[in-house]
Length: 146
Image 1 (cartoon, rainbow, N blue to C red):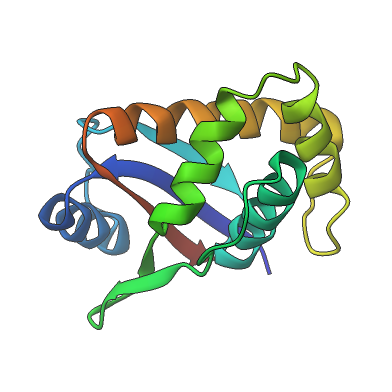
Image 2: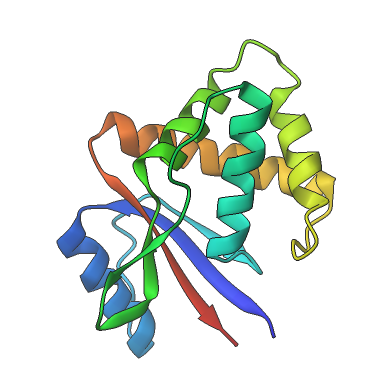
């Protein structure tokens, strides 16, 4: 089953409003930083976080994406630790760190991207999370199976 997903940065109220629009198929405002993804779900981002944390020797923390609201089963929030790891990946001293993490992420069993595709996706994700963190926003994942 294919998955369409969107990672975006906003506040809690904005996330609920965006999820309502996405779930209803209504016009979705283009007023937030966002990244559209295919076949990336919560487990994929948790695996990415574990790989990045291990690569950076960043320690351990909560990587599990949590549902935001009982009425929005398709909406998840990225935990602060996962966001910290992704921000640190963007600042890594090793210039090959991002490529190494992307290649290992692409090798995860359920991830359907190649390493060549995963690297720009990861780079865009790191940029989005870094900007959101700087701006004091939370990062959310909305997922729909199609």
